[in-house]
Length: 479
Image (cartoon, rainbow, N blue to C red; front, side):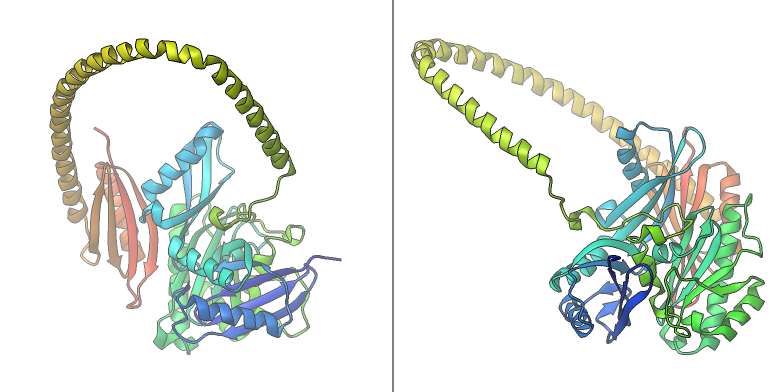
């Protein structure tokens, strides 16, 4: 008998539950959520949402305590890191250092999960997922309040990517308050974007469709600019799920606008004729984490599990128990031997007391003289250190001023510089523009200037006002 897999996905508007055995959908249900219980994919009222989860499970007579859970991709980041060939014992530290360098948020505020993916010879590529701790903690603690044990977790865009069995594809999932765009290039789901829908546009396709089309176009152009050797040709399909999967006329309109085939995601399980479970596509993607035999995913990261280690259950090891028992017995024997030695040596200790007292006095005098020498040496080192630190500050000031001058002098008239920060040999800038083309051209001109060794467009997002916000990192040329 096939083992049942229970998945739960929570967003701002509902809790979605799906049970499958890998062959068919056994159970599916959802519970609407009032505004404010979950905001931007982050659980705000843990107690109330936990009660709703329990009620949903009770209504469907589901008794399991182990669930696979999904998290919105709204605040999460994915990135591909490029590293030189390293020995395995150095790789983890190198990944953390590189992630800390390129991510716009301190690692202390994130849960970072990563795995290596195929790379060129003598190089290492790493795919990493960075999830805000506050979002993951709120979700997982909500399930713990409900008495449930999440044993796997994923962000929604990667769960959707697991549903596609082609190495290159475009995925569009539209939900009531947000939509996800995922581009899979040669098995790597990158870029990934989760875009909120302004409240005034949520009810009408006339308002949503132009915005979705515009963002799809921008994301495809962004991918093509980063992968000129393998752009997304018009035959690459757009797979849709969510609300859009139930709107064939809207899908056709989207296909006509973009000049690409648009089709619903195919599902790995059976379902009643005429009842395509568009609302539960992400749940099926979560289930495929467990049902590996049913997954034909071409994604190179289909097996990644984003559940933080702090929430992973500790497996029982009989070997470890035997080792612990043996260690306790060994310690008891050692203590017994030490006790015997101490009894036999007590007389010798008494005879050595006077000699030790004299030795301590000599050592104390020597220590005092050594401390005096060290204090003098430390004072001299401190002076040199202060001088060097002051010179470093002067150098960083000059470096920042030069970078600021270049950044502002090349800034197009229609691009707004929102912020700029300096960290060692790197500038992090945030710009706003209605045109992605202008920002990409701006980045190319900065790199051509020669002041910066590398200019990277790290991420982009849309504001409620329709402006695009871009995050760029600029590496200063080493002198």
